Length: 395
Image 1 (cartoon, helix red, strand yellow):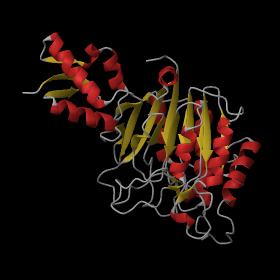
Image 2 (cartoon, helix red, strand yellow; image 1 turned 30 degrees about the vertical axis):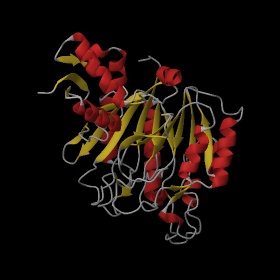
Image 3 (cartoon, rainbow, N blue to C red; image 1 turned 90 degrees about the horizontal axis):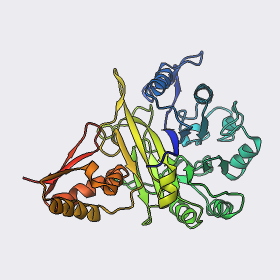
């Protein structure tokens, strides 16, 4: 693994509320003075667990049901956290941050309260803010990476747009043209930050998924063709933690960190918990392979206990992404290694470069690898953090 890392603290769907608002919606509650014990506890855990990042990424729904008071409190809180940790903060609005249905008294513009927030939202730079609210996206130029922030709730307030996300075809065209221009310097990694999911997630709910981004796959295809390096896409909305790849070239990875503090709705409460993740992008490997590559740690919130390493198989306590080696090929390599060495078992550390590839296997690839190994009559054991430990002949 390379030594050059980009560290990201990824949160989403906070759904912050005030103490006089519906308490069943979120654990992140602010009192009138602007204090939240949940947020204070989260910041303390981040510091004490050595999870201080280079960048905090927040994929929207920082507040709940268009509450202007809660939005201002949590936006202040995130900016205080940014200053305390001396890091960057990249945040986009979600549908709950806008008055999507124009239900508030005197409401005439779904984004009015956000445009006049202080500190300026989403960016302190007036030019970036103007670009974001006028054209629904902006490009954040950073030393180690590029980030494109997109307002997928931009058309809420019109017709039934509140029911979905959207990236309009012309917006996709403009972003693609910008990325291909000289203004977009090629970096080791590019980030997309949006709220709605860019492809349907019908494996989460039994009903058809119409909340995804209308135009999402058109957008993903456009940025893949820009030849400006690999992409990491961060989204929220579904409260469903997962890592998945898009396309057949592994150049785009889509990550949802789940919901930090919303009360998980009954439809998925038996399969999802409150989570956040800490990601280390291996910039050297990413540049060399063309695949977004890195390792992550995931933490779950347990009421009455606090934050602890995740037990969720979709986003376990530690894992990776960015391996280019197919599970079937790796399974056969492991079998050949066992046979060549004439041993009944072998440790992951003895696999050399193939052992390194295992560090970058995403949960879906791990599942497929286990299946391929089982077909070859090879069993697997794991270490205390859920990583591969040994491979051996099944008895």
